Image 1: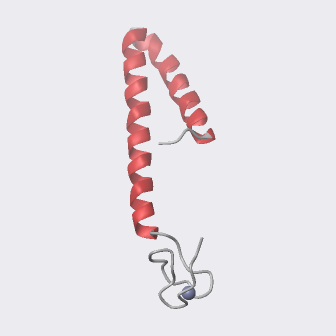
Image 2: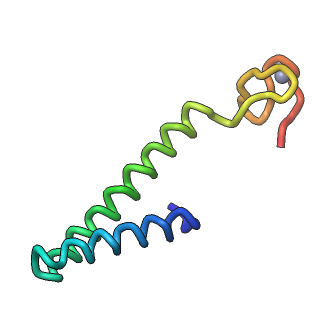
Image 3: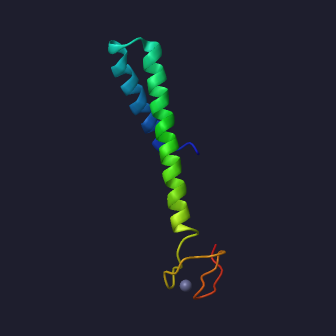
Length: 81
Ligand SMILES: [Zn+2]
């Protein structure tokens, strides 16, 4: 879970959400809900990324579009970076 620019946008959104909750509940609970939402989104995004990584694997060959396995294309057998 690296820290990206996207995370700043997410944090800003969660902070706004928290501020919006404060009129309806104690700030303490608003903070807890905001943190849970943030962690939930991070876990969800992390899992989705992992699934995508698994699906994509190591990428595709630029020459023939075959899946790269072991940094090599099974068709062209050219090592990929
Ligand atoms: Zn290839």
